Length: 147
Ligand code: DQA
Image (cartoon, protein in one colour):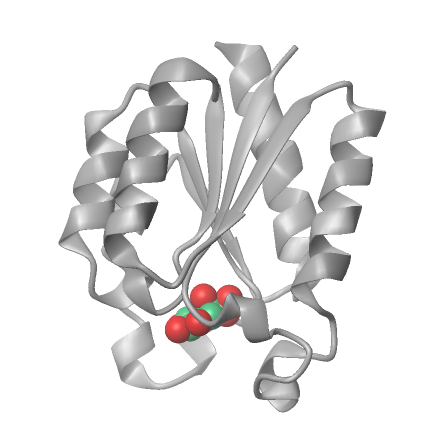
């Protein structure tokens, strides 16, 4: 059984209310429900975390990759564009990471065009709203199966 760790970064707890013109009306709870159903359908394990704190993301990646997770699905949110600490946590651990974004970060402001995470991720999916997570989950599963 493949175990997939899902991490939602800062402000994603506000989905549904947060800039719906960009992120849509879907809530984080609804995304998590779909991810859980997809995990069940694929007989995979899933653990989901949301935090607004950079260091906590680092701690979760370290702990869960050591003890439980086979792959990481992460939307680092604003930390995508700033966080050396999250990038280095991903490089440090042995499990592959899939980076996802609801929006197409390359269609938006220039400061979003740079991802600190992409160079250390196995791959990324962006621009498909909640489907970015569902596609990303399948990509993470496929990476684990190929290992
Ligand atoms: C985001 C894109 C980021 O630029 C932004 O800071 C977010 C959400 C997305 O899912 O589209 O918080 O990661």
